[in-house]
Image (cartoon, rainbow, N blue to C red; front, side):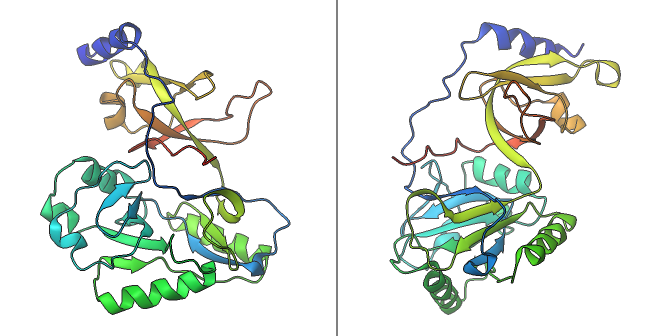
Amino acid sequence: MNPRIVLLLLLSFLLPQPSLAEATSPPRSMLATNYRSGLNIADYWVSEKLDGVRGRWDGKRLVTRAGQPIVPPAWFTADWPKVPMDGELWIGRGRFDEVSGIVRAGKADDRAWRRVRFMVFDLPEHGGTFEARVLRTRGLLFTTGILWLQPVPQFRVTDASALEARLKQVVAGGGEGLMLHRRSALYRVGRSDDLIKYKLYEDAEARVVAYTPGKGKYMGMLGALVVQRQDGQRFRLGSGFTDAQRATPPPIGSLVTYRYNGLTGKGLPRFARFQRIRLDPPPPDPR
């Protein structure tokens, strides 16, 4: 077996496991709920769910949704509007690992940041309805003339059938899914049906607590991650990895996102598979 994997396996049992409830000071944000049938689709603006790193511009600096500082080159945020903006640091569909690596590097790599755009989807302190915020975002960013600072395209569909057709089109093109935002909604901290995500699968986060060794063609590499949810339940993620990720698996203690299709009778995720390492933990639901 690969000596590095052996060492990782040993460390997974010897190192103390981190708590899933690490304290953060995230921006107070509006959070999405999952799509359900029966909604009046005409009441919502719709946009693609971008596969990037969520950020908050507070008028002076960029931070992650968990409140950690993001360090782009000075030119990247020069002349940005001095108003808070919610957005996504994004390069393109299927390029999350690339943009995440640039953000996680913790230094202003000028050449790398030339590929990144900040896609703005809301103005949290505007005070008006979402429809008013969409129009204000378009006007505000158009006047800046900054090519890497853009509004997320928002569109309307007539009914659930049209929405499903658009979802399939986005996913077929390599996108993640859709976001629905009620036209009349004010910016409210927390979760509600005013903001909805619509995907073909569910996803969640868990902490890496151990590894199991690979077999067959994966001999000497990672077999599966043993992960722990916030409620203490443990299970394995054995699929969804590239060969490079099996050779260099996510570190013990890191937070990962996994996809799944419903729950088993014991409440565990069905067909759980690895998706990506998370940049930072999701913020807790505001109280």
